[in-house]
Figure (spheres, rainbow over the protein chains, first blue to last red):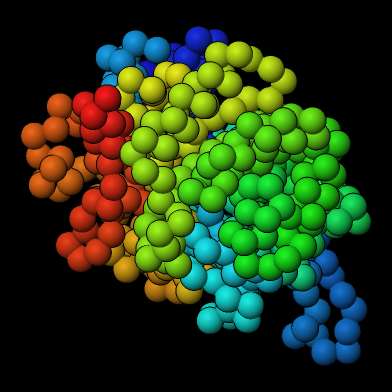
Length: 67
Length: 355
């Protein structure tokens, strides 16, 4: 139940419960990279926006740039 | 923490099963030949690296509102640094608001590589160090492995933006070096040292130098407990490989809970979908990204990981530790039908009785 998780996650004494590390994995990635992620996200969105490209062949006029 | 509250927490986590930790076995190529490797990797790799686009297609099935903060994608192998497109993969994950990390032997982790990966958003790193020079190189099957790992550890310890730890597989050869390894790592500024023991699978299955005796295993628990009690700048922890009875709160931050298939999934080299990559993939794979929708598989399958009643057989059937152990680490179950390879709680109890 999600409300139970929210309570545990919100309390400082029990928030540590959610910071696990798989046996052969790495420590979890800290949250503070979110600002950097947002910047990367914006860039990715810009790159995937449809752009009109002028070509002689009208059927190929719209091209989506890959991520 | 109160064991009763922890049981409630555990049961609730199983019910909710939020995916927030995903392994990608991005290559099985490796430049080393470790004696304890569970993946049975090789220099060339038996299978081709999975194309990044295939992995990203699977990732993109996870709805954006099901990518909680701290969602970590662990790129593992083989040796992930052998992939030429690692930074590209990292940027693609950050663009999807996912954190990413790697587990490495450190051989190719140079200053330039570190800068490139940090620029691509690398958030966490684990480097393996399996002893002092002779023991490590013996374990890793290649001279110079220790020197390279140490160089990587030194670099990573200086990087501020990295959640970093060193992991050591304790075996009969390096058991007597624990104090010295501790001094070495603490001196290098390592924030966390994580210790695990070998599971008898892959190359380690028939190696008599690998498995600790019950007495050594108990002494290892005492060593970790003493280091934690003494404090110090470097945290020492035991991995989540099994339930440890009276040592539970002495050697870990949080009591034992195998998150495999509850919060952890993996995409294996051949596209199979499983929990941790070291789990018996033939027995427990739940689907394939080449056949199934990854997110649908996560939500509708994984039953053997979330309903563990099938494990209550054999030695586990009447075990008094069941309600806290739940069969131990999932990677300890192998074969068809799966049977348990080892039980840490039993080893510790047996050793106490002998004393």
